[in-house]
Length: 45
Image (cartoon, rainbow, N blue to C red; front, side, top):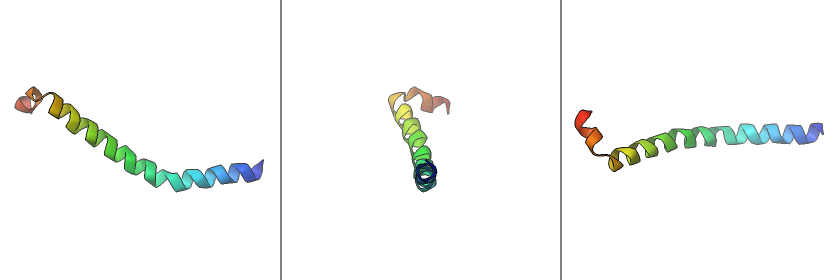
């Protein structure tokens, strides 16, 4: 049991930077996509 828990903790620590990178990428892509889909928003900005 403890061995398994330690392994999952190591996995979380390893994947944390990757998740942070994806977390920064995804909102940017979604934002640019929504701006492209609704060009009328650009006139107000």
